[in-house]
Image (cartoon, rainbow, N blue to C red; front, side, top):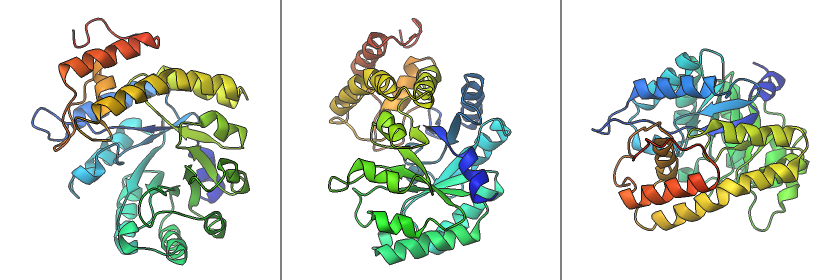
Length: 314
């Protein structure tokens, strides 16, 4: 696909999925297929959403080199073209990133989320060379993950501009450093699809962005599909207020439980269980939420108006 075709596909709500595990912490691909079907049936479809699998939230770093392609394959085959699927590559050098990108491409992913190769201590020139080599080696799209808080992962605005002509580098997962105005994204929106990753989707759309990373869409897709409607209708402040209504209290809750055990997917997996879609725990050393913590989260979700099933974890 060419650059414009990829930008037309990779837009809207980026649903960061978790990876289901069984009681023995082995992949539960049946549960993954079940959830993809549920998400599509709930309205997470092409033109509105993209499923992002095997990311940090999806416990990519906890999976073997044989496991993550199985997750991508299951998601792509179940989606069957009804919703685009993108995968992730993190922390690898150019050659290994290209190898993984081609694996995901061959499995049917339409894109990849790729962070700069921080283990190689890259300069800004290295970062451009890295993404250029990946772009030249594949036919699918790349969303740059600007994880500037990680060592050697910061990308300057001028560096992004240097990548505007790379055919398959089509999107940026946007989160600006403290010394870079959020609105500087306006310098990039003509060349890239910009997705908010800083709890400010309304601000992103107001500045010409084309999407946002979800908060808890796998647990209750309808909420964030409603937000998408607000943003696409130009109701930026109303959409942001609806985002904050759920994101603020759930993130405050999450900050308390992270003191007991870390793990990016703990909140999302717990919320899915409460909404009647259990997907198992994260792999160690992360621990599942305690019964008391689950009860508190259930109260939070009820408090923001979610239709929590009475039978869930009763």
